Image (cartoon, helix red, strand yellow):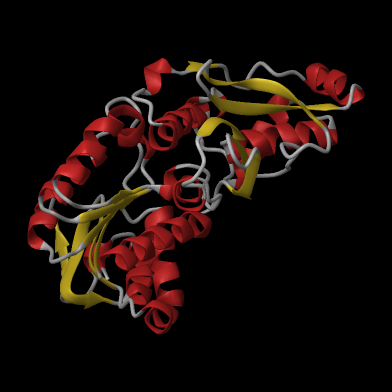
Length: 337
């Protein structure tokens, strides 16, 4: 399978790392020979239809800051759309930065690949939260697969789990901690007695929170994931504006302490049900499945046959996210085999 990777930030580099690490294992285990034939970043691209060396790509990006420095096959001043026309690839890996205003340019990249009859794997929440039905319909009409396990919960296996492991069940609702940054902040506030502002600043210094943390702490990131879960698993037709959102920026240490004295923790919870599409801080009992620390994500799927099924996994990290992308690549290969 030949891959075109649009975006070579943390997630794109993570994909290159896991492919380098797992390439021989994928051949032995599944007969899957993965080649990266094109990679782009904001400054250019590298294209070789016989395959680029993932280790060399990573080394060059680290050293020069741009993949266009790749010897012989680097190209400056080329757009992502031009790369999609020029490259020989079977599957697009769309991991450009997320835009939650209009989902671009990722949406256009994905639609271009789909109409060119290419498979697509993405971690990009923007186009999925804003234009899910359009993208899913386009993939179906063109006979290709659009996979996006990495868009919700990083390494937490929820989308493919619901579709592939629980096909006999109707999913009646989903409740979950869907953002690792806010869970890290709230966990440390509960453990240490520090203020929200203190922990946020330290989280930014550690790289857990973004320089501009608004999407995380105001609940927008979790709301995007609620939309994806609602559409993908529960068959709804909703987008970001349909979600009621309250973040954690107004959570005080006093509120955390009062909850703890009563045996509760405060967590940012996303809910998908017939009654609500919501992201808000809620009380969860200590010792419950939702009492997870750090950047862990957790979700409980309420089903008609299997009752409650809970999944847990790391919700952040380039390698963890890349592991979900590789799982989608393998899944596509198996169905095409």
